[in-house]
Image (cartoon, rainbow, N blue to C red; front, side, top):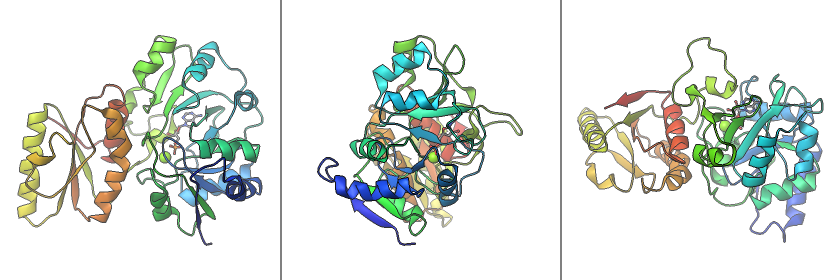
Length: 350
Ligand code: AMP
Ligand code: MG
């Protein structure tokens, strides 16, 4: 199958091009499309066969549920049994935007979409191409990130092509994604909401609307062998570049000293180190290939650049990657969660 890439600069003026993607969605095919978080791999969320095609294209484990994307609130009503007050307040404040809310699903949502769970994660993306695609399709669109399972999420159409060329019929190219990490996943099935995955809508932002919110303990800690989890995605290797990653945490001066020493030592032994740094520290290193995530005082900027940098290390053919830790406030928690998972929770605390 040949993968067509269609550039959409202005979705209002390019409805004809978007209609080609709509026809594919309506006929049960999958299409990659831009959202403000990362690129998604979409199919009709109400069609079990279409949804299975997403799992095939990604080689995604069958027990990892998909997020369903909607363009207006009436679609949400059809997907869930009941919408509690807290969920309504959050939707009012953060939709369209990078927040996925988990509620009990209605009969209309096939178990293929939720990977056998009786809950469903729903979000309304803000990217104009995504909204147009969903509204013209007339169906909610199930879409995980458009990477091969386990790889860093795609934040540009080119990244999708790297992973999905000849596996899907079409990619809508809407430019680079602003947020750069996937949506915040919030479980609202119990009275105190639980963050299962941190993202662009931060803990602080959620708490400002609904009061107490807790972060699931496995956001920064691996699951124990055999542990049952509310979020099946926590079980799997995620976001991993080809070279093994180690996350270094603690006092910044100690981090820099440790990374510099370790990279130099291993470079002398003939290895090619990769260092994932920040603007403030980039010039401190002598050894290896150094890339910056951005300004460490602006965590949203770090989030935006993280996955693209991990993919750059693949192209630069490094043997291992040492990643600096950042402050886990605001979007920093999402950045630390993604690096920790890219590292398979291989973390050194100084
Ligand atoms: P992806 O779309 O590939 O970025 O992954 C979606 C994430 O949302 C995964 O980590 C899932 O485990 C999580 N998720 C989606 N639906 C549910 C649900 N009903 N319950 C718990 N977690 C969910
Ligand atoms: Mg994903």
